[in-house]
Image 1 (cartoon, rainbow, N blue to C red):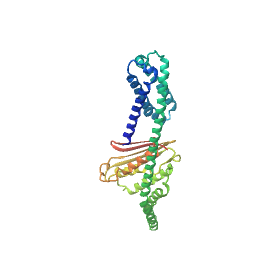
Image 2 (cartoon, rainbow, N blue to C red; image 1 turned 90 degrees about the vertical axis):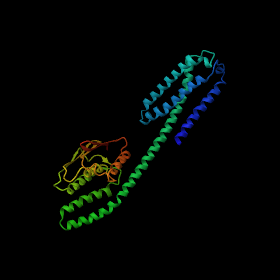
Image 3 (cartoon, rainbow, N blue to C red; image 1 turned 60 degrees about the vertical axis):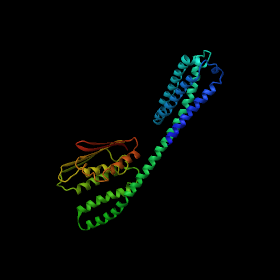
Image 4 (cartoon, rainbow, N blue to C red; image 1 turned 120 degrees about the horizontal axis):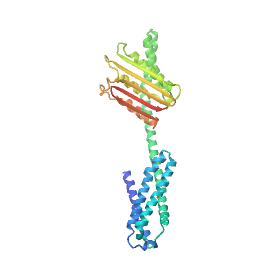
Length: 341
């Protein structure tokens, strides 16, 4: 509805301007001596002004100003002003002269007049374009804030049950240690470490990359202990670069690894999971590849795509224009994430 109102206002503005210009021009002495009608030259001028206004307001201004290409915008602004004014003057001078004057007016005088009017249209369209673009950016920023708040609330809700489980794990660890069950105690300790990270360390926007890698390492080791040694599963985790530099959004990578274990392993089937993490200064690459086994076999799981959807949403909020996510399904299921730390 708002869009239609704005369009109607634009139409009203140009029609009103056309009527006013026609009425005023008829009362000016040189134009009142016209041999014919002023309709055609005024229509032509109005079309030129409309095209100039919307080209600058909706194309040049939002594109170049938004990308901060000010010098290119200024050059384009001046070039557009001169070319359009020259074109309009040529048409007026050779085709419309007899419509509005009995005198042979100089070409340069007409160019100055058209240039003055076109410059006013361009300046007005610049103000309109900047204002409209500002409101558009403010609306987008507000939506990003709302999405971020919603994501954080969802994340906090998801921590309520783990908090209770973490306390139970502490008791289970003490019990396993007291009874000499080292393997069980080690599994509980790693699981408790994961829970501790989720509850007490990850409640920040960005965290040290080394801590996130430690979390991933504990998760992988816990998954290995869960799997039977008889299962034909090959798991590789490789790190290249210095993980002690840079920060990353916490728990951003783990959903990809969870999916690899959830959908890439099946009892009695040979499978492989490869996880590669590469850090090069501020550039970060994360690749997870797993066998295609259970990808199509768990469609009944309502939460099967929820983790991936949340990760994409967080990437859009926390790394706008600074990430690239590619997911492919060929012989294997592969996820590649590139981002700037």
